[in-house]
Image 1 (spheres, one colour):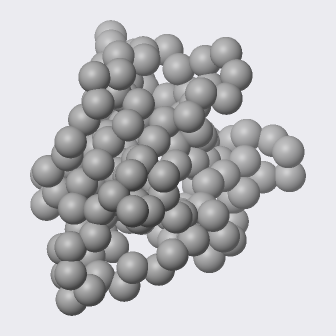
Image 2: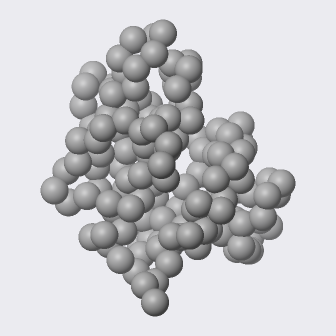
Length: 148
């Protein structure tokens, strides 16, 4: 992904990332966490840091006019995560339906780039399917394409 992203602070376990969003609302610390759910499945969660800690609010609307840059930065953590946790699956879902719809919009816009390195699925009516533009998925699942 050759688009502009923020610089990341990365924990050694590659499960926690931080970066600073900059815009009209000032500098806002963002936190990205990969939370282990079961076996080889992790949840990708992110939001604004609460009190400069690893706790975060994933409902807040920062309105810093940098949505694409923030989402590209979050997406860039997938490469780092999968370097250490190869063979796992990552689930992503917005904290609200409108956020999930926003993520779908950006996944659709960058689908060709994403599919060069990842397999992207959406969950609909209890079933996973390959991600298709224009489908209102409940959540997304992603895994790294195996090296050939």
